[in-house]
Image (cartoon, rainbow, N blue to C red; front, side, top):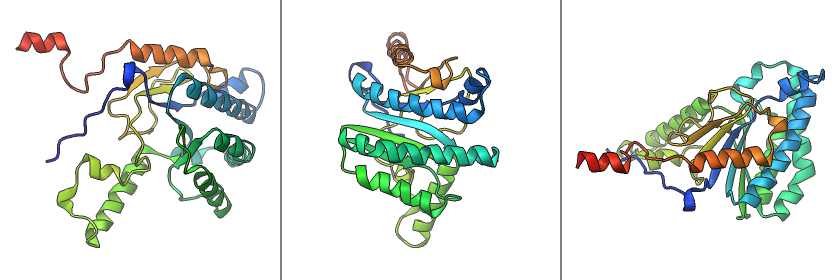
Length: 252
């Protein structure tokens, strides 16, 4: 059996890849007596700020959880509004992101998406595929279990057609079938709004990530909050299942 791939620390214990579960838009709007879409609109503004802040702080890869496979159970009007916000974000920001050398990737399933949305997402990826300064990944129509199942089916199909051998299967091989192929695993996962669960987000990739849960609602999340999460990360010791150095000495 192939050994599990060992994650590697970033230089100076700084997270090179941060993933964020953007939560709290609805509660933020409700607290102001406004409809949920008002909170989602404010959340898009926060996305713009945090993408720029993360890049300026030295983060190289940012993954944002924007729409999950479970979100289809929400009211149709809210889903339509969320899709509309994504279209507007792309239309308003694609040129700027491209000018800033940002590569945008979409993680998630294409099932249920209309042709015009698929074409828009393809345009985003195609336009920015050569950019290298910063990686922005949008988890859209995404679910961790769904991603793993899709990868397993794809590998099984390749075995059936002779393109792959079952004996080749290991962590590194399986990762080539995931949406995140080529991306580093997240070092730090942040969830806003006070909820303390991962909600089917990057189940494979976050196996050794550090987690920070903050009570701040996503529209209020600021550069200061991002910095605080990074500082929390830097004060932790990442062992990936190994003993701490002092414990190793005791065993020896």
